[in-house]
Image (tube, rainbow, N blue to C red; front, side, top):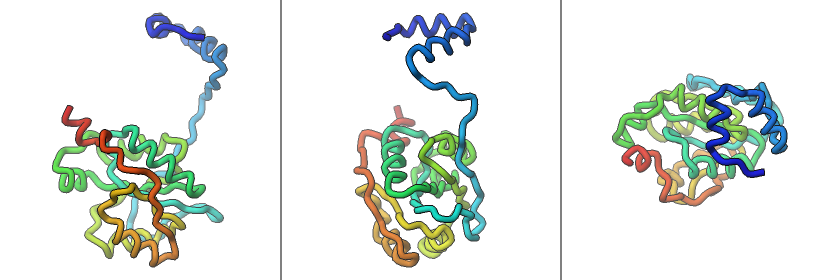
Length: 187
């Protein structure tokens, strides 16, 4: 069935939740009252608690304004294993490396990522200082895969870090040039 946006708008402005639920039911869309979210954990340079018997995939980034490129990257990364860990950079990384103020603070970004069905664990990073700190992070998480985009500027370092724990580096998505949090923010 096809419905115009004005129909949905009139339902929501009338406060007719039951009508919306009936409509969703008619369209065979399952509505659930509960949502499962990922674990969110602060990183204190210690071992990250991951459930046993998981094929861990590690990704990292800022994920300030979540867009299509991020979703494709995370979805493809999860497909390489069964437990996706996102190492989430602190606000200072956005300020220092992207040269702009974050739209969402680290906690807000973590909550957004945790709501995605393919994210299992979000690690809130402090400011890490170079290769040694990031290598310690990888050794604490012990991933089987470090997933990256095709033009990752840290690929050589990530390969060394992967080697330190017997993991592989896998390119899971091209860089989608049209999608960038910085470009979205500039619009």
